[in-house]
Length: 368
Image (cartoon, rainbow, N blue to C red; front, side, top):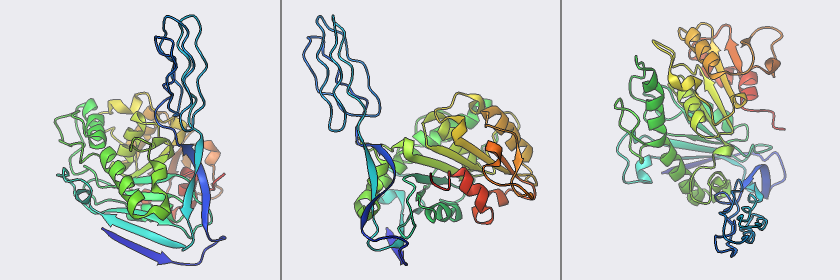
């Protein structure tokens, strides 16, 4: 593991500050409903309440967890309502020594079960910024590429995001004739479950596990960055404050992940695709992440441009296609999430440094 810091001038008052968004300190959904015997049980604060189990007599409402309010008592055998969700906490980043911190480590340094794509991952946090976003951006690189794209990772870190370039299974041929294989392979790369014979990904080699272990590691080795903010109490990633963004192959994988977990948003650069030679099933499946939190950027000189447009349609991205590099074009581009570079090719769509306005808009900047 390597930790590098670049020290610069702070843009605000120094000290340990509370910054950016909020999230729940609570654990799983409140389980504080009255028990079948009518006795009270203790609820755990969480993201949402669940109903208690009915009993022979009305169960007393569950007591609130550490951050959740107690549930109401049941009546006539109905269980008490679950405890309310946990109170949010703020992100706390120590800015007493303003710097850009870069932490590098391989997945195998955190998990002896790692067997594939054991490449150096990169975490970035810049405490010289004026304000933190309170969001983590996980970047997914293109086919067979190392973790990154690092230019994208650095772009978001410079704008107040925590950023992490993860090593994942991306060294296989995704172009298939079976419409289910596209999504099954990308899903297996994410969760490490057996979805397809095309690739073999273990839990230790999955994006989900590597992200959770990376955040736990960063919480320990870089406590000033409050990386634990992006973890649930059970050690799993807190998806609601996490953004997935990728280029090319990574653009499609980011959108696929957004279909199965409720992310803060998805930003796809030169993608999504998975529409050649057949259109993937997953593109038109229901999405855990609302489509109005998903964005796609394509280059009109990209050979894959027409495939990207098909994917935009199948996912149902809001708005009509808007060219963002023509005179008069400016955020928020009429509210469209289908964006194009008139003079851009495949690489240009992944170069946020050359297209600052559109990239900032897709990542929800400026911060509200």
